[in-house]
Length: 203
Image (tube, rainbow, N blue to C red; front, side):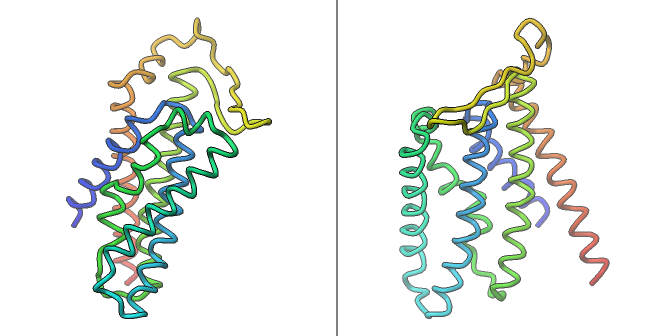
């Protein structure tokens, strides 16, 4: 089970974080999308089971995540079109990531409360690590902080000048991003493992 968790986290980091631009705003969008899909998807799957429509589970699930992703994309098109142009196909990655497949749509026969607790705990760990990854890479790798600004524009504040970035600019490259993602993955799985051990000890 632990090895499966590590594999899911590794695949999710490589698929979601490495291809995205190393700016905090883009990481924030992808992590928010993943969190919302996990939360609402868990509720929809519970409703499907309650209505005894398991034979249509796959079709309804796929339609739901695609519709939700398209709605989120359209909201961004209206509010911050630059983010959609930059992310492109990457906006669809959370919907088809191994994280979603491995955690959200498996049928373990447990109650809605337990599924919500398990799925939200897993996605929360990953979301926090993804936000930290994007923030560190934005500040240290590019010397900036980016977020949603006024008049549908991306806000960017220069924190470290290009002359002072030095060795930290390595994080802006693909190998540097992979190294940072590996560190985040290790910390995430380590903390998640500690939480599991504490929960088992309490039980």
